[in-house]
Image (cartoon, rainbow, N blue to C red; front, side, top):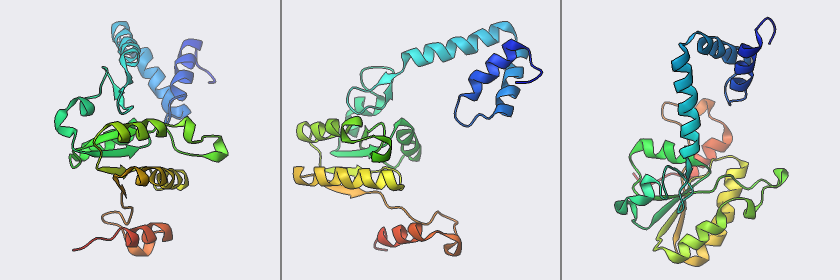
Length: 199
């Protein structure tokens, strides 16, 4: 980074490695950190280090957790027979913000992507099947993203789950609230029609 002293350049380079942080933003944050009182900079660094060190995966669902089980799996009221399958812990967070779902989750930590060499053994599909065989599961809700990899993963899991007995459903994808049909792409419109429900 031209014209910067090495410590600021080093801070900016590390920040630039984070997703969504471009070079300009990284440099602006680096200058902000450089202007912080030394104790505040230390507290920031320590909280990042300690926070990252304390994060682990829930032994049941694979979500981020500070203990053996995440808060959802530890809550007995959530054991209602539903398991919502998602790609990563960020998806759990997004669904939890809605306060509409009251079952459990299963985090795959990826989706099938043969082009990238990611097959069924590279994500947590076997663990899901083990849960279905050992827990009382009445419904598996497939909530992977509506992209090529997410759809392929959902279809693959559905083929494995159906013979085991639980109902297997897919979240509906469609026109966003406030969206205009005129400007909605064809795939989204098709999914909106397929996901229609009784009124």
